[in-house]
Amino acid sequence: MITSIQGTLTSATPLHAIVELNGFGYEVNIPVTTAEKLPVTGATVKLHTLVIYREDSQTLYGFATPSERDFFRLMIENVTGVGPKVALSIMSRLSLPLLEDAIRIGDIATLAKCPGIGKKTAERLVVELKSKVGASSSAPLISGSDSAEAPAGGPHRDAVAALVALGYKPADADQAVRRAVLALGGKVTTEALVKKALS
Image (cartoon, rainbow, N blue to C red; front, side, top):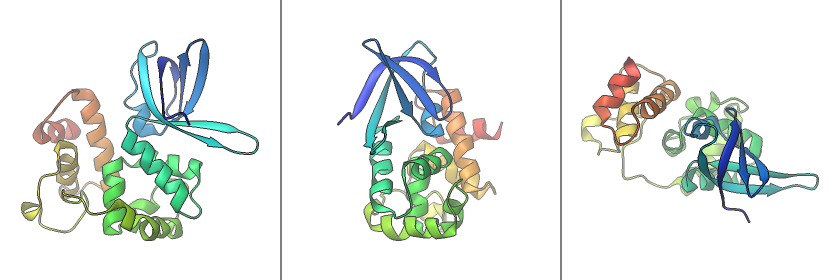
């Protein structure tokens, strides 16, 4: 099992990366959320991977973090009707914290907006993964609860929650905060992320 690959990033698109290692170029399928975090072409990159073997193919999937890879595996192994292509599409639309929160609180509407899945598949995601996602120590990004009563969940989660409170759709808020994280780089505060996302 290939659990990670580290080498030179020779090319990248929103859904594919070519990583050259020891003279071999490995094509890695990636979600948009990972593509956003890739370094410039020619730099060293490390992706956490999962190989899927089929009768007629071997496909390599890569993610920015081990937790994203593990969640991808969880979806394709546990949710009926969700294969690698659909799982990659879901993870391209929603960041892992937002995806886990949507499953945890049963937000079918947010999940159903992911390309390639409808209401029934969104419902299956919730039913089949809710117990596996488990309780989180932080507040959901998308809920109707009073945020003053909820514990802090890190700058990314808090910034998304703030944008949702301002009227953004959860997926749009998540995307705006991901862009802000990339633009600001390093460790940032919730306030800085919200300001950048709104600018």
